[in-house]
Amino acid sequence: MTALDHAGESLAVDAAREQLRKQAKSMGMRLVSFTVTEKPIPDPSLEALPRADHERIAVISRDMRTRPQEHLAELKRLVAKYPHIPMLRNHFAGALEAAGQRGRAAEVVAETAREFPTYFFAFCNHVMLLVAEGKIEEARTLVEGGPRGPVFTLTDFDPTRETFHISEAISHAAMVGHYMLATGRLDAAKVQLEMLQETAPNSPQFRSLARAMGQTHDDLVGLSAALLRMAADHQRRSERRKARAEKKPGRTTRAKPQSDAGIPKVRAPHSSATSGDAGAGLFQA
Image 1 (cartoon, one colour):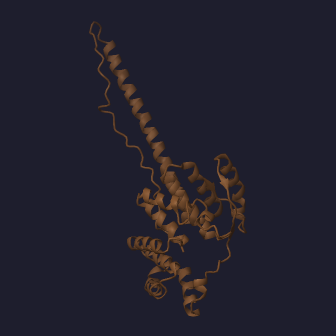
Image 2: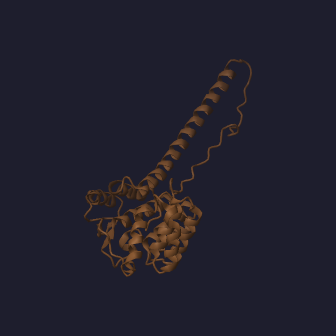
Image 3: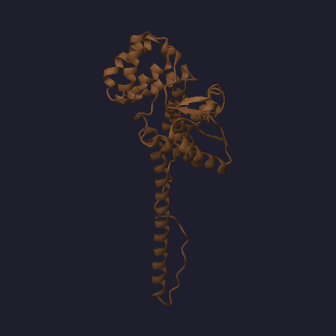
């Protein structure tokens, strides 16, 4: 398995680099190198649009999460006008999500991923959606099959690129982290969580993965505590029975077969990678 290794302009990314190296080495993972930038990466399909539409899209990108209702109709119009630009569809999904229409947003995410399987954000959003819905095998098919093979690093997703935007790195780490958590690979999920903590501690992606991992930890701690309480209660009952038997001389007490009757059942935690605020700003473009 591979691990992320970023060398870029962001000081936070660079600070995380050595930590990732140490973690990857301890886990027997190989490192790959690429550059992460905070500068805009040109999109030829957007650059070719009329200036008025290009400028409107820039405004919508900035405001769609704080004022989604104002932009839904316009985004729908732009998607119909430029069906070949997947970013507009992802913006539409993001605005739907921010407006509380999560069901419709999920439909748009899935549709976009099917129609544009190599569009990075649609891919990540679709995997996150599947994990949140508990469709782990479908998510596994995407992550471990990918457009060109397994997509555990950014360069796995697109080996023709050496530079990626910071938003791509954040979305990818969140997607891989949730997937690893859902498939029981907690150490690998922790690598992604620590990378997000270094690069984007205030992002919904970090909060979502941290919450999911925290819930898993809390469930396990709760289960352990419940089992300890059960064992202690059972021991106390046994001691009381023994003490009562000793107070009645001459009476033979036959040991009863052990049974778990009366011992409360404890359900093992369901450790899924559902994001605590799935949909709260997770659909990116």
